[in-house]
Amino acid sequence: DGGITQSPKYLFRKEGQNVTLSCEQNLNHDAMYWYRQDPGQGLRLIYYSQIVNDFQKGDIAEGYSVSREKKESFPLTVTSAQKNPTAFYLCASRPRGGGTDTQYFGPGTRLTVL
Amino acid sequence: GESVGLHLPTLSVQEGDNSIINCAYSNSASDYFIWYKQESGKGPQFIIDIRSNMDKRQGQRVTVLLNKTVKHLSLQIAATQPGDSAVYFCAENMDSGTYKYIFGTGTRLKVLA
Image 1 (tube, rainbow over the protein chains, first blue to last red):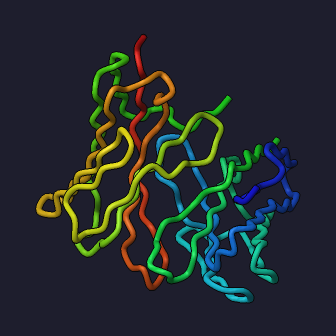
Image 2 (cartoon, each protein chain N blue to C red):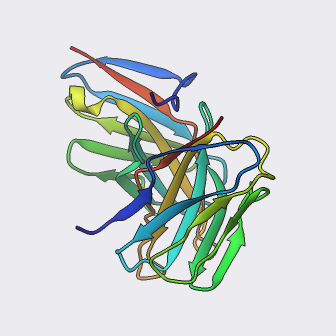
Image 3 (cartoon, helix red, strand yellow):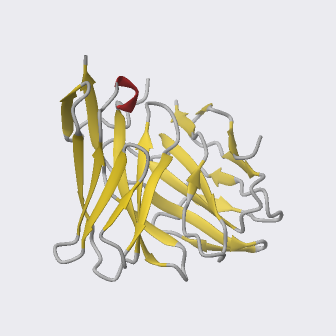
């Protein structure tokens, strides 16, 4: 069953703690993305990666970090420096080149800071 | 429960009627557009896409119209069903070289039985 998986589905964090959200894809896509979704707002880009071992900051990268050691994995760490981390986090991927620009999303992780 | 979608514009449609959801995009240089459907608590699901060299594209029960003159995109859903109830939003790809997208805030579609 191909697709994008995110875990966990729900995550609770105490203030001052770092947490890591998992994103895995078996679609053989080169590019992967992390977005944050808040009520009443469009998706905002946190980080994206076009190839392994390379990634770029998005529009709201402060307080977040990522790694891209494997093509199929793009974990996101929400650090204690992120002032308002409670949100729905979405991972996405797309092929690089090949004439398609379609981006596909995972099921999301809801992070709540207690 | 899922709080995404609060404070969004809402379109209420009778079951069986056609739905039209609109989106104003931001960049006249955008060359690729996608419509997504997002159900409560789930990730966005691809519905249909269109490139800027087209003004209309049809899928199964859905049609996307692109008006580049006024930077407007619409999604038409024929014979709306209860399962179509969700938040719909558009995305524009500004630069395929950077793989970056801009997303609209979305419209909530409610299908009335």
